[in-house]
Image 1: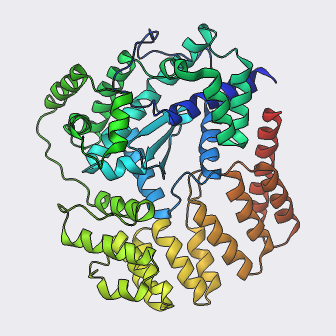
Image 2: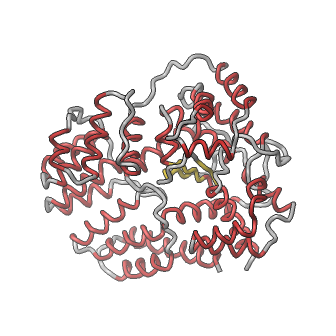
Length: 471
């Protein structure tokens, strides 16, 4: 195993352990004597290695079905994260944001700018600012290079020399349960302490995160208020929070310091984005469909939540009868109503509802996905493809988009585009052998332009490079 793969294995271990023991957003842990707070620690890890590791983590999560792939939720969390990173320091490299199906109250960041927020944390937050506060904190861990310093400290203390560490990390990339079992046996409780952020890193992440939060237009008071909220939960319905606090007890000094700093930004004069409330209910419907919307939300949100849950249960007639959706300029409400129309085979109603919105927001995944499905189901295959072509495909594009593209291309009898769609989905789940086979088939069939053929050739080059590094 070459040096790069050993490092990759170690980075993978760092991610797995931080995810397994909820080590991110620590609230009080021993110091690691971090070198030069705010300085560079790039001596141990190259930018290329960081990016490769981030993609490996993200694609591994997607391969295991650990993330919510709904186009609307996917686009929302990316948009929120991007709004914050534009105000963050040292953000030359791209960030990747995702929502995990995990119901524990947690979030984590890892190398390569990957920030994952658990569904449980979204459901326990009360405003977009509170959610943004946690995300800002995690972004700060990345921009201040805290993870790199932990790795440097671990290497310095010979923490990563055990064969079980490497074997366990590599096993985890194929079988997460087997890998975690090996790692837990080899590292036990000491790993938690050595891979957790210390007081100085947490304090810096709070300070930098608070600046990011305020400059991005969110309520700076949301950071201390969320920390205080975690401290106050103690009823039988908040076991996940109590477990989190037992592992990471709140520091009174940390809460007080964050409260004092937040006050210096003055009173919040902005307005909370209502899209957060819709997305919180969508996350609720996708992860805990038997739970209800909070009592303190508007009747519109309550109705949206009820209709969503009816749709999830397949009660489409009842959902349409219950729906009080009138504001079809609201993307979340329009998309939900259109999806119900599609389920009832009322395709022209869905098209009429979404067409005005896609003209205002061309390429919007949340709108384009159901609109393409409506066109496809109504027999207008070419128009469905034109809608999908407007989407600016990226690493984080919802996997559902590629599934729709595959089906539309198949109905168009364009095997080249159909195979490419499957390949692009496979790439984003780390199934490189499958992606390579699909791309070779796509290139053989007619139906792709010269530009598309060149893009697929480049994908093959990228796959070969990844496979070479993995040897």
